[in-house]
Amino acid sequence: MNKSCYYCGSVNIVKNGKTYYGKARGKCKDCRRQFVFNRQNQSLNTEQKKLIELLLLERLSLEGICRVLDIAAYHLYRYMDELYREVPADLNAQVSAQAELQLNCYECESDELWSFVGCKANKKWLWVAQDRKSRQIVALHLADRGATGAKGLWDSIPEHYRQQATFFTDDWDAYKQVVPEQRHKPSKMKKDTNHVERFFCTVRQRCSRLVRKALSFSKRLDRHLMAIRFFVANYNLSLLL
View 1 (cartoon, rainbow, N blue to C red):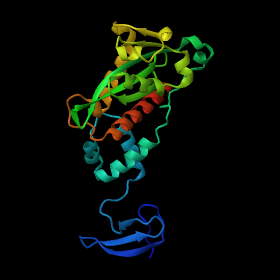
View 2 (cartoon, one colour; view 1 turned 90 degrees about the vertical axis):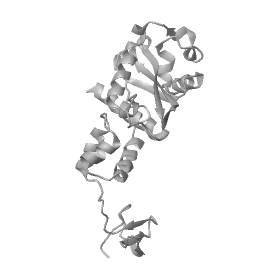
View 3 (tube, helix red, strand yellow; view 1 turned 180 degrees about the horizontal axis):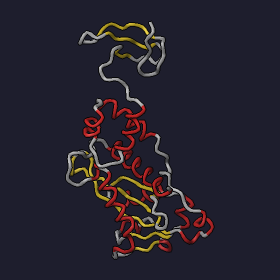
View 4 (cartoon, rainbow, N blue to C red; view 1 turned 60 degrees about the vertical axis):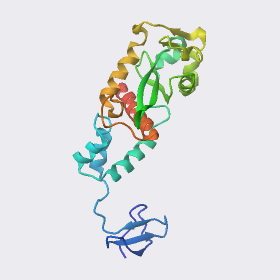
């Protein structure tokens, strides 16, 4: 038998009867998974994968991507999850060499963005910390809008940056419970957080999951977070070009 496993590529396979629809089925002795020999929906090719990486960064629903590329949703979800798992923990955020020499020049703006998962009653706030000079997102966290969310964002910020930066926030009480008072500058004036609020405008225009009134909202919390992390990591890379 010259066929190979659909999942792991092994040729150590055997026949395993037929499916309900009469298609020949095989089983891999290495990964122990079953598969259909003559699949109607073939695997994604290299060109399709490159297009998926680009389309995921635009305000387009997953069903829309499937229609554009004429692929099955199963293949899209599978490759999409692979991409999301490869997102680095630091979100590709880098601090300039000048900032490393001048430890007092770190300035960070923090704010939170409303979103939801499944239904609008299930609110999930996106907490973001943005370096004012480079415009890069140094940390993000998804939680409620209370002190727990602020603590999660604070813990997500890199240690060296957290100890050296001055944080500009709005007058939300949750920040005051977490950020040290000597390095915290809360203000009710929009000009102190205008850069991070401008980023929120960008991310709402580019990420369909964050559009306020749309059908392409997230149905699962894990994919909601990973999709945002995927966009932010690529956003940070674009600022380095």
